[in-house]
Image (cartoon, rainbow, N blue to C red; front, side, top):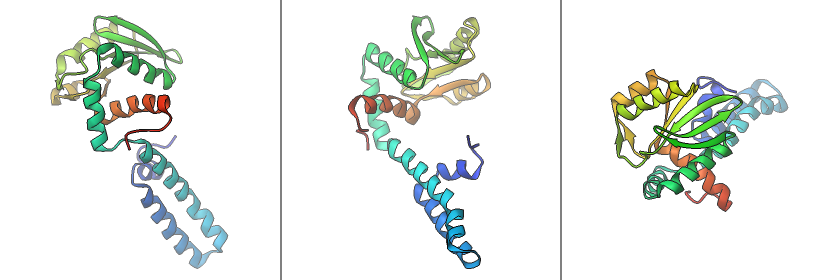
Length: 194
């Protein structure tokens, strides 16, 4: 797996056509000094990166679609939202137990690594540090390796800092919309938010 700072990691987060341009420039430059087949071999990995970046960008909802998705999520009843979230984690390879006790809503298990999820207050516009403290306490009480807090709104600066210090994963905005969209896309065949 590529690291975030590798050339592949950087180019995979850029528009797909940038990798095509880099590959074309390398091909043109290499062709001056090397045979065409070798120049093509030098440029080929960049076309692969372009395909990967294009595939990811095709599957990622636009900013407008993220806003629409988050508005729909906020309008869902708790039962529908929690079921959709549980299914999304199942599709990501987790064994999901629905707990709904105190702070913990879902318990995830992947290869023996336990994560707990808190998502009851997903509709609030802005989450502060209080619910995250509760999640840290629940994480420790359940001997969980990870804690995930889900919100359709934003987090205060203090909450973001606290989450980073305590290794709490914040799942909101585009990441939440993409997670839910993958379930809906799988249920209907093709992604409707593009």
